[in-house]
Length: 506
Image 1 (spheres, rainbow, N blue to C red):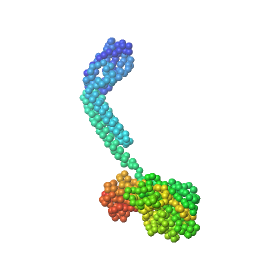
Image 2 (cartoon, rainbow, N blue to C red; image 1 turned 90 degrees about the horizontal axis):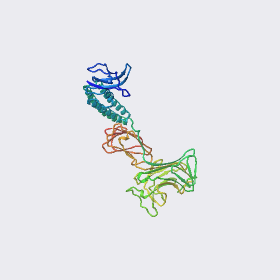
Image 3 (tube, rainbow, N blue to C red; image 1 turned 60 degrees about the horizontal axis):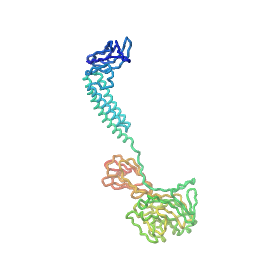
Image 4 (tube, one colour; image 1 turned 45 degrees about the horizontal axis):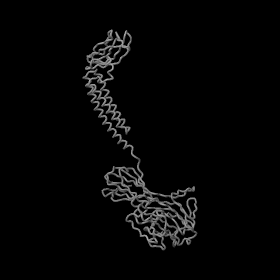
């Protein structure tokens, strides 16, 4: 038992004689039922009594007054003797047995572990909730351990048991921390699976310049410029002969027609009073001067000469013998290797002409109705000077009227070829007009997930390649016959991996 001994004084230091100290047990223990004990001070305010271990509320009264509550005290088996004040003030100092100090340390570790589990899940709302549940569970165990200590009534044996329970709480808190980390990783994976980025739309880097005139007189001009005797009607521009005229489009610096390819197309109408007025005239020519320092390695072109120093792509449209002949530039006679001959040339009809050059190819093509037409020719040397990397459509001997209603340039800045990766699932690959050879998709020799699918969207007259990375793969065609080798196709195609490196194209 513990002896409580001391003196009670008032605020002036005078001893309180005959004061009643009331101890009320707040808990039952193995040796004591909940009870009330009173002690009365001597004339000098002294008190001296023994108390069994337990938890008590303390009240002080004098001369029959109601008195007031002093607080509560905890008496342990090994509590040293002391004054009433020392026990009332024990909350502010660690006077508990060693077992209970270990218990509180374990409780603190348990709560710290629980808090750590909560902070680890900040990056995902779902895992934060899970971590919070783990933390609450750990704190509950800690509180239960503390309650167990109180129920023990202060006995060291009960305290030691509570300390053991606190140790279990700490272990459970550590387990909670691990569980929270696992929940965080699971939440991240769920978020990754559920919040996928939108499907990607791939299109090549290019320069595309369009001129078009709308019914209300507004024009989409891009970088096109016109010079000559020019008037504008509802939907077109009209050059009037016999004055020379010219239309220009300057390419931007990244464009390299010989390395990346080049295409132009336009709608033109040639008109005069009669066919004989057109006989022998070069009604239109297309020129694109290429600087020699832009030639790709190994690209063969005619050598420059003093009278023909300029390298140029293009063609000339000459009216001869009731035909519109598409010829090499600067031709004085009709060569046998002409681009094309349009029989039955009719004045006043719209034609859709153009020029194209495949990337890395020494051959250029005349375009008719947006499709390659006729015999290909190489770039030539000429004595006519025009600005380099500038498309020039012009005539020195024009028809009476030359109308344009549409002009377009496509100058790729890259060869558009893409090897599929797992991240491309659901993507669309757009192959615009003006892209020919070397454009396409490469199907990798990789076991992509079954159902992996991409879309190839190619404009008319564009046939991108669909290439197998090697012969360790198989195509299944629309008819269901498995094949190997590479494919091409225009329009819209769905390319699907069905598993085991087998691909379906439809």
